[in-house]
Length: 114
Image 1 (cartoon, rainbow, N blue to C red):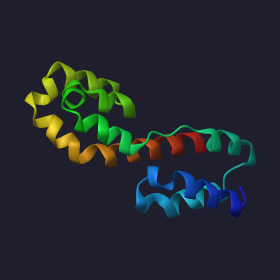
Image 2 (cartoon, rainbow, N blue to C red):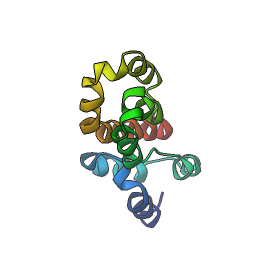
Image 3 (tube, rainbow, N blue to C red):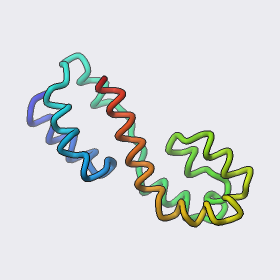
Image 4 (cartoon, one colour):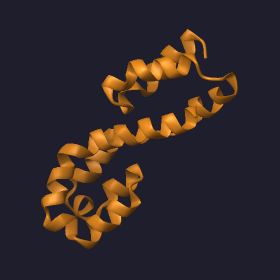
């Protein structure tokens, strides 16, 4: 992938990944095979702000929708069955869900890159 496309990818999707992972992402994109470029640019990533909003709304925070949104289906179901861990898990996720969403996006990108 050329430098212009790498810069465009990072400018448009960079805030959806952990900030400390951006240099590593840049390195992987530079050495990425050309046949993977379409898959990487078309990859859908979850918005951490949306995950935070789902976690903020009391009903969704307790129901596990925020975890299901980022792809943690099992944790979302467990959160639903426990009522957000009797409320404690829902409060903790309010502070951690954005980082969890960014880490999930990074995992998805690394799998797509191969």
